[in-house]
Amino acid sequence: MKSFTVAPAASIRGRLRVPGDKSISHRAIMLGAIAEGRTEVSGFLPGEDCLATLAAVAAMGVAVQRTGETQVTIAGAGLRGLRAPERALDMGNSGTAMRLLTGLLAGQAFDVTLIGDESLSRRPMERVAGPLRRMGAAIDTTDGRPPVRVHGGRPLRGLHYEMPVASAQVKSAILLAGLYASGETTVLEPAVTRDHTERMLEGFGQPVRRHDGAVSLAPAGRLAGCAIDVPGDISSATFLLLAGALARRGEVIVEHVGLNPTRTGILEILRLMGAELIVEPTGHAGREPVGRITVRPSVLRGAVIPPHLVPLAIDEFPAVFVAAALAQGETRISGAEELRHKESDRIGAMAAALRALGVEVEEQPDGARIVGREDGFEAGTVDSHGDHRVAMSIAVGALRARGPVRILDTANVATSFPGFVAVASGLGLGIREDADAGRRG
Image 1 (cartoon, rainbow, N blue to C red):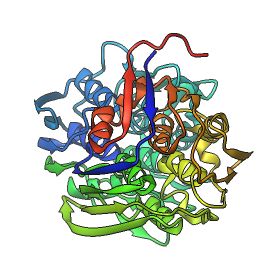
Image 2: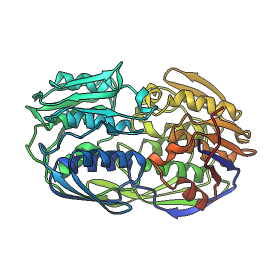
Image 3: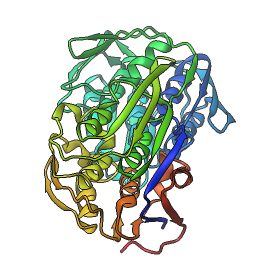
Image 4: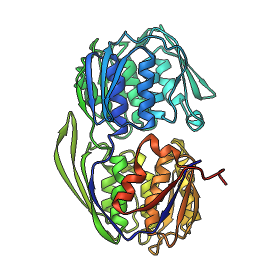
């Protein structure tokens, strides 16, 4: 089992680009696979999650070629051109891949089974399967969890669906199924969620209508291959921005990072807590806005996190927990029950990790109350529970520890941020990766 050991550091400094956006990389591969013609993807994230999606479309007969570490060429098979894979599609640790592919595969002519690793096999899938069944799909889950079996050859019909919980994955799965449905499909969101699917569908030639908190599409019947430039992932950038804010000296500049307004809630939260951020828009990567973010050492303050920002920063909340733990005063987080259904129970995992490092945390069903300690973490050992974002968040916070911090079960960091240790070390973080740390204890 891999682990990190992190030593305190005072200065964090550097200018860099982070790996490509994971959400956009997944969608580029899926839509390129069912488009007609060639799709050229640059800035692709070569992390394990996105490579699982690439392997899945290849297993269904799509010709894909890695022309570079972050370049992929896809010869699209068309909406009806996918073929039945010879075996189950293994999505590894990726809930995004499994949920979105469930929607895309609901309209195919063949049966397929989706499986995942131990962590993914514990994650809920009925939130996707339920509305897809209402469209006419035949989908079996295993006590509501993976494996997921999609039975092909069922005609789909358009759906008007009001999501009970804001979820970009559920919305996207329904919209992808809507490409194969008769009539219009509409998803009504209770709160704004990331809109990468809608933007990319339009780039492939599928009109999407946004109106009064809803997203609708009437299937155009074909997608056209195109060029996609994947911007840097703001979720990955968050760890480095937090490091820059927590440091005593230095400056961190992240270039060509995605600034999609449905993803920048973390910037609002960090600013609310006192982070000195400068955000400079520099243009667009396809239909996605991009820019440069600069952060300098900051005095962080506890805050009440506004619930409306939660869906706009849901993946970044492990970093918010760490910011709160090292801020002046108390932070309250609520409305984030969705965090309990990620790669780990992120509320529980972060609360346990912070307590192990001497932080006062009162765990709540949908969030937590965290009392910051400006003098830094105590030295200690924490368990990331195989969650990449928990591991990276604690690693960054450890630069303000009073001794070494050991983080267990870190192999899954490669799912979203390959090369994290090298990048963090290059900025000045005293981080070491241990290849064999023994059993979790």
